[in-house]
Length: 266
Ligand code: DGL
Image (cartoon, rainbow, N blue to C red; front, side, top):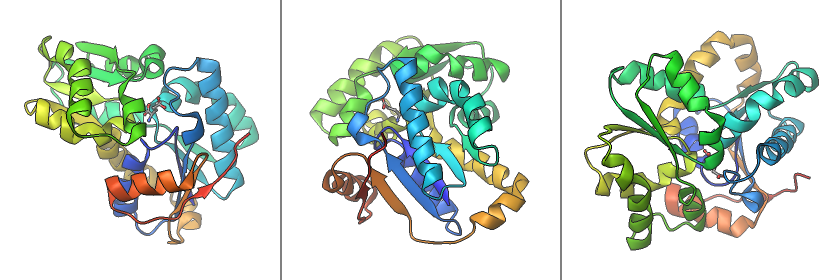
């Protein structure tokens, strides 16, 4: 079983792609909606919440956990690496930042000016800058856009309010001559239509596009593990908040009719 985690709805963007591209595997999704958003919290709290979520997923059948959350990938993953090695030596936790940076390195010329937008926490972690520098990108602007993830959690991802908030976040950047924007928060996938409507000339790159490419390579290298992963059960959905609201969001944005279960993490 492959466990996919996000603070709330954002990781569903990655989950949807994984379900489409890897139908032979069994997946479970955990959204910590009750405590979302994570992105404006301290590094200690993001790390603690992420640890609880990973432990829950491993305790409930996951062999691999994908942090489909840039905030958790950026702020918590390296803090947790020792703990994870000691407590779950045979299991794997993957983040989304390195796969996105690698995708950028394969698709964007080095001299291009790139912007990264994400939560306060993701930008504070500096992990995108680090990863992009490693691939030779030096012309990188990073901006926290902390109002966008909470906007997505409300479900209002199109219309005048969404456009107003997206313009507030992106207009200053577009005046700085950027052509590529990394949507460094999985929640922002749900604003793509609004962003594309307002800024049709921008190239957008995000984890739902980049992560599955990395994951396919990962699975090829981890064949013994994937043998155990193959099951093909129906995907399971878990949330720490109201099931009905979660089901409505999934129905409205992804067109899937699901019956999520509510769980407690701490
Ligand atoms: N979806 C998340 C991310 O990719 C987190 C948003 C939040 O909880 O603030 O960063």
